[in-house]
Length: 229
Image: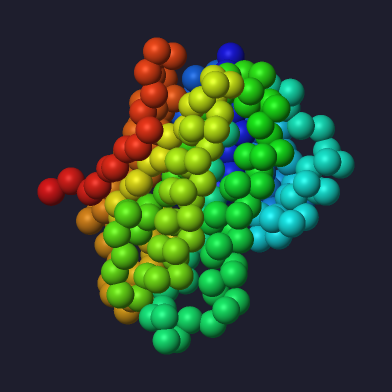
């Protein structure tokens, strides 16, 4: 039985990923931002271990998690949580930049740092669910894309730094996926949302599991997955 820690398991890709791993009989550890979310996770994922920590406060993660029991071995750390705020550079306030950088980039880096002993012990796998915006930027996406470009840098550095410890690192770049975040993006774009036009979260999850299940003699470093025709 493998042991996985997931952020962003409350909905969308993270929720489906948790469901699939439970179906496989694996052990889950989940990050909940508060006690209310923790109770929701307990109901949806019976038997999962819940850690309460707020990713919007990366500076407080070490203190929050230090007061809780952590896994001593991890097969994977799956960074799925993220937030988005669209806006042109001329209209984006500092708070929007800071919040997206904190949740999307700094928190995953800090969480990985805290859990590296467990990942090294398990010769584990770190998966960053990035975005197409982590490779190409469109007007109005500057602050979000900046946070996702930062995630790409974190993943690339971590891969080289931890290779000798047997830790694999994969970045997945999904295109538009039918999730609550995508609904929010459409509202911010002033566009009508039709979930049938976009990838299902399950398709992205299959991509993630492909990377996790690859034999140890190989490593998928990057995967791009886009909505089909």
